[in-house]
Length: 280
Image (cartoon, rainbow, N blue to C red):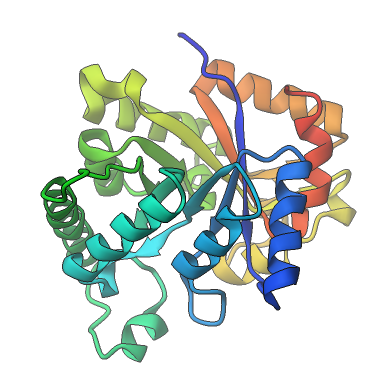
């Protein structure tokens, strides 16, 4: 297996003032991150304006992690993607997901639907958006990141994604050890992608980082996943240990699973920066 160089992203939650946001963006770059990412949830910054504002303060790549395709119109999405692609000098990475928070669908007057319905909406939105972008004079084509853990999502990613992000639930399969669960999902993606597998960059979403179990802040993912702390601390997306130990673990993940792109949440940005130093 040919190993890609590591890349590191951080997903920010807070904007504040223009000057505060620009300072935060510069901090991300100074800490060694390659990509500044913004999620797509009510109650957090609007992704596209935040990324454009960060572009003037940094030279790193900028990504949506990930947009809720279930509530998006391809026509408006293509317009916004084309504009952000241009305003960031082609540094945009377009992350898309099927949506998983019922309240966000309710807020825009749309049914949450089944997982299958949301995935079909994602696939249709992606296809229509790509077609509209291809019709633009400059044909902007930012890399597409899809994220999740389900087999149908992995199948779609195998056909369409440039980057796939394994969610925290990628390490969860009843009766299966967490790393084995991740390995199985990598294999599903490999089979779905066929000859194009080596062209897909594999991202691991890291939800928590800490030097010991008692120092790992699991508050965000505890509520989102519904899992107990004993389960969470065993997952590939929860990194416990010294910076050296975590770096060694990520080197092994790259060797065994092909994961070379790692994204962390803002509360763990400084702690994970110590790990980055050992992987450059």
